[in-house]
Length: 258
Image 1 (tube, helix red, strand yellow):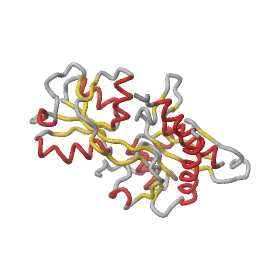
Image 2: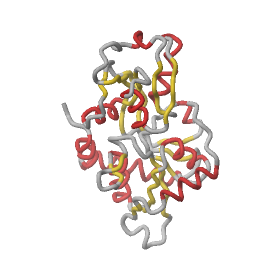
Image 3: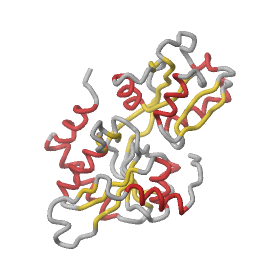
């Protein structure tokens, strides 16, 4: 999947801005002098990671990582950088891992090692809530469509744009993409189903007009061949959380059961 290039200085600046934001140390790992892992994440990808009214980062990914760290006894610093910057930080060894609703794809497996999948997702198309003209992909002909850089939604839109004759405009954050559609500058956007479903429930002004296209599962990522101990801890913690019910409790908190 294509991503915009991010310079080393930008990565460092993003990391510097993230210092002191949601720093976690779990169990006795810190007191034993064990390594504190740097985990990068997105800034706005609700319900997986987003800021609460109090300014704290919350969401499925945030709570899942905290619960796994507590279960496995490791310490970490969370760095909310934005998706593209988080991946760039991982690739430049500025972060040890990434949890950001990151889809497991064959292309990404060439560069990253992934945990076992922790969520199965898919892609939907959404339009402005009062838009009755766009109901299918065919209605996008000669229209402008918004996507978020580096996401499953962007990849899917790229795969069908020539067939349906629309153009794409890219955004780094989901809220900017939504505003583009609400303002009428783009006819539609593509987004992961749970993210769009949560956003609509919170009044983002959009509506879904297609069924869910099967997408990839989400996984925790480390650079290929690096931090295998962290990856093993994540996998074992995930198994334990599924067995003790904490995993489902986290999902139920953010994604309503219909």
